[in-house]
View (cartoon, one colour):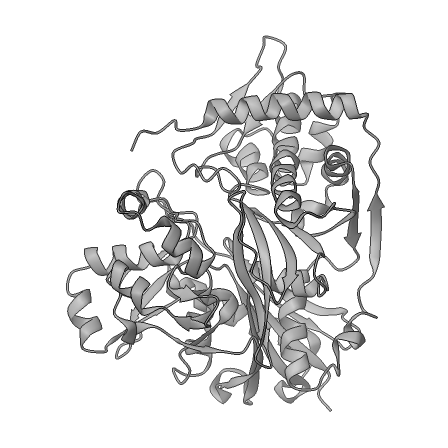
Length: 497
């Protein structure tokens, strides 16, 4: 009997492989960072080959650390940074351009043209998405419009488009499987979340040839096999989900109304809305959570572009700390933020504002402002942005949030989690296993091959690490939120189109 599930977690700054046992424990884990490419202001790229090689090497190292043979791995689950866009030549296997990362803003002008032509409501109705440069469709259009000869290759059936899951699986299966699942497809601006198909009308508007698109498969089900040349044995590939949907599944937010927030590079708040795709009145997104056994589960999502990444900026951009974990000590060395508010709109503002021309700003600086105040304001900015998402989500769903489940690296910061509970006036639950993005992919793969028998089986695995309860007075909370919103308003529309 196989003992383990291998989860491949391909993120924005690193590739990670984690092996889980039946109790949901981490048996081994390996991670490798890879390069970030910034060709112009607001442009962000990755080398697709580096993505693949770091993901493959971490998988091999994680397996080696367990002293397990490949036949001990029951299945592989894959989760990934979502809207990042890759186009490659099917004959050579070589990408025709770098991966354009979800954070990239180069297609803001294309988005403006689509809005001016009145397409916003059509895209929202069909895809659940607000027209924004964040999503894959306009990135794909940009590559086809700007890489010489790409449209001719596409017309000849020699190109493939994929988000990162598609690229990883294509290489993992020795180029046999060109697939994605609905959770990733629903982030492209090309997928109709109601019919579960690529939408011909939207493809025509964006001038995307349908023959370059991957096939859509179940989020949980055997879709192919990893080549025996990679691990010495063919291992079923049996689970796929975009990182935020995977984290929602990993946090076992499996009933309508349950909410989780992931504190990663960005922040991503998702509410399970069951079989109904809610149309947001507050600029949130309707997205497919997962499709299992032909049953589609929807989520309502709010995205913050710069969440935990603000800590990296405090470290690398300002030089206030040497390691990310030092920010909590620095921030708590002062009793409050000293009146300093940081709006980390380095790549524009996500939900509920969707201002692609906003930019980062800091307010309230005085002669007495120190690096500690800035560090504290940086951490607080994460919680404020999440609070904006929660407020919008509660309005849309007409439900009061009672508990927020959290995951992601930044949720290890006790100060941030307590401030989050305070500013939301709600309980925040942090589980023992924080690798819930990877665990969700493992769950999806394990269910497909019978490694776990049922969702009920999974519910015995989730364990609470720490519960944070609100302690802040209502008057203090309201004053902080009012000042935050004033700062946000002043950061908007800084860059002129």
